[in-house]
Image 1 (cartoon, helix red, strand yellow):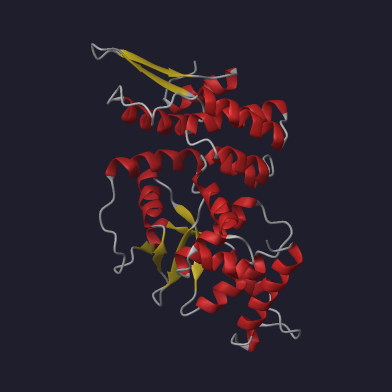
Image 2 (cartoon, one colour; image 1 turned 45 degrees about the horizontal axis):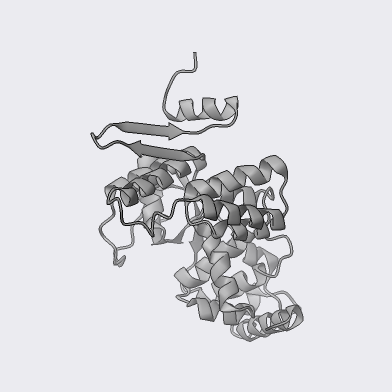
Length: 305
């Protein structure tokens, strides 16, 4: 097991080796990458949706229309949490490097602009160095770390093992941090805002059902649970969640569960679908305060007067 000191030494060696091949005008007199360069490479800016064009080399051409509509609905509520990545063209427009699904959903949602990382031409070493230096900051939250690791995999084509090697960490640690990007938008935003710690978020990952994650999330905020208390709550919830995956009694349980999870993520609360044999049933959307009830009504376009 690597110690924190050896991790930092290993990361430092990686940075020093990269610095040797970076142009001197990008470095300070001490040989470090200029803060402004790191800022430009690792910070996102908002770019007009109409100024972005798809990458003709993108191997993926078919996008599920229903999935795009669901993502567009989520984007209307939360904006885009994970910026896309683009390169700037000579014409002044931008070409997608990664994030075409988010870009298409943003257009469906009617967004005028979208957060994006702007890559320069042939800057792979610069990107790697900037990400490595940025990851040494003390004030990074867990979601920023997860995004940086994901960028190393998406844009530098690193495997999780290679990211772990560069960062001086175990592969399992890198994998767990990247898994944070699968959490519902409300939870990701709470981590970004400092309302939820990395420890809390990692505990929630153990729940593979979205509505259960959201129930636990609300409990954490309402009761100020510690990480250890959150882990205990997660274990309780795991026991109470019906073993849908283990059951083969109902062929309709799996699709209903997926719909429940999607609705739970959309409304940020627990959702249940109860179906009768004759095809009738109930759709139950839970709320815990009057404010949450009003929010659900607004999402359903129901007048509050």
